[in-house]
Length: 116
Image 1 (cartoon, rainbow, N blue to C red):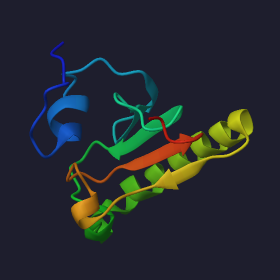
Image 2 (cartoon, rainbow, N blue to C red):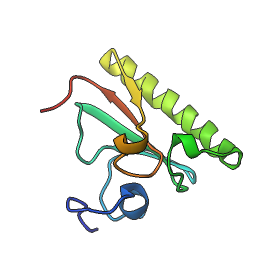
Image 3 (cartoon, rainbow, N blue to C red):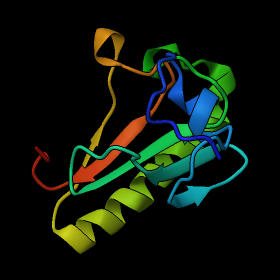
């Protein structure tokens, strides 16, 4: 597998993670959703949850994405609950617009203080 450390595109998830071009520690995978430990974590626990279908962001979800959104919410709830039980706290975050480095809908589940 290719290393993704020098990736310079704008959709890491389609181009690298979902395409299998980097080794991932997966927490969950189905036909629609992939959840894995971040390749460059910002927190001690840092899991990313993405739809396998390209969707630009949370604000571009459409009625055609309802099944995927339902699964995303279910996966987010399950993993966040597990992290909360194990760590005592968890957060779920998604970014929009200029805050969104990768233009592919994704959620971060994390716990702990930001790593330096």
